[in-house]
Amino acid sequence: MLDKEFKETKVTFKKITNIKLKNVPEIFKSATYIGFCNSNDLPHGEGKLFPFYEDEDYSSEEDTNLFFEIFSCEGEWYEGNFIKGTYYMPSSKKIIGNFVFRDEDWVLEGEGKVLYYGDSEESYRNDKPIAQKKGIFEDDMLIKGEILNSPGVEFSGNIDAKKIIYDGIETRKIFNKELGDNIQLMTGEVFYKDGSHYKGEMYFDIPFGKGTMKLLDGREWTTEWYDGEEKKDK
Image (tube, rainbow, N blue to C red):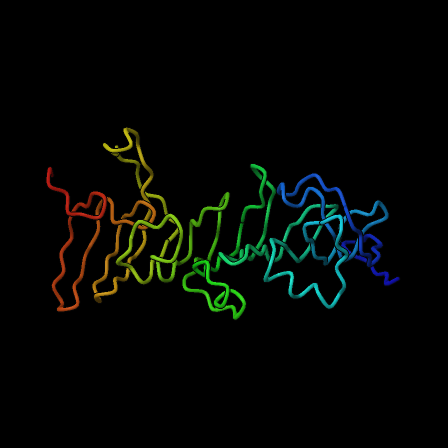
């Protein structure tokens, strides 16, 4: 056995099949854990977690391949809770950063990034993301940072953008007719594929509110925007 200390607690390296943990997504309710544990056999320190299948017992040689085949995670654990590392979701995305367990799943809280692979097994195995978002997250939502190749990011509405920056500064709330409710605007920038650039208020990744648009030919103007378009009813 390999023993050491983690956060002033003695931990032992173990492999536990069919481990039962509370704060994990449904797919990990019965799982195989390989890593350091405390005296209560709870993950504590560096370790990996895979879904457990009754008729299978994974060898160490197979562990690496599992990251390309099934949902799994590896990183830092604290008293049975996954708090920091990589959450693998083949072959859609990899989520890296600091985690909390909320609404039956691990979500980013604090610094992190999400890499998107477009459901391509080849891109996923070769770690060649088609898009990513990185920065500071709050309840799994990016509040300060950047999005690269916006069309490849799920839920993105700005298909013409190649890069989006969030400043992390909230400005004001305005009424959105389509939603029938107020929405919170924040400041940021949008770099478009055609070379134009927007800087100002935004709603997620869309110009919304007061902002300045600059075209590749040098033309520039500041106006009020609504859902990505110049507002008509000023």
